[in-house]
Length: 295
Image (tube, rainbow, N blue to C red; front, side, top):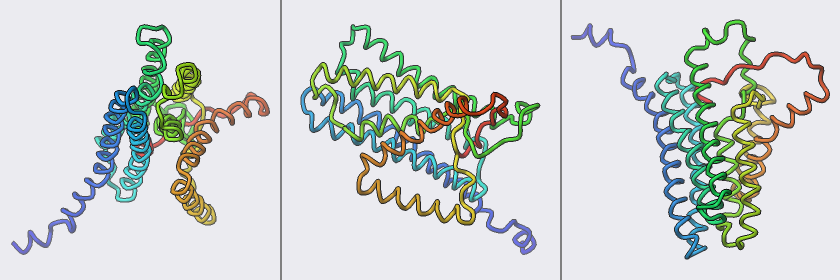
């Protein structure tokens, strides 16, 4: 008996328990997505009778998506820090992202803008539904492409360049959904409360953003991943930047979240245009997808 106790691997139970921690963050991500969907539905029904109550529900939905981004970031970081990343964790995280950053933002945009601004039988209403569905499909496709590259990198990477972890390929789905949520959080009152014509004008603009975000997600445009930060002076400035961001969110969340989400979603496209204008056509081949934990 003593020998069995002696030969048993140390901290086996503790090590197994560590695998639960990233899963808990992913579960929190799903919970926030579920909250956002339910709040959007309740906000839609309240928008025709009680604008103040609808505003509360829409803001709750937007903040739920924002918190989900935090949980989605933490689950990958924790999994890598504790060496508990698993293949099932990759799949679970991606399924969570489809709900929280695909379905939940699409539902929120419909309830906050499209559903009240246009009649259900009209062409614009139908076209808007199509764009929201394509946003969801583009996000799901990007996650499927990512999962394929994450689970079979050796097969798919033959003949390709070495993985460059400094970049994401295509706009990740969390900032895409986060930008839509930030727009709602900036002005959570239902658009129909501004009047029919104004609501329709803003909805056109919003649907254009939805279409652009969908295209960016399935594109091969490079986006900075910020994975290389953390050492030396870079790490010091990263900590300062994070502290400044947290302070800005606490004091001016409506402006800070919209600014950060907008700048990140746009910077890849802007850099791509600048490269096309000022650099020679002989550009390096695109980089491969990011690691599973950072999707």
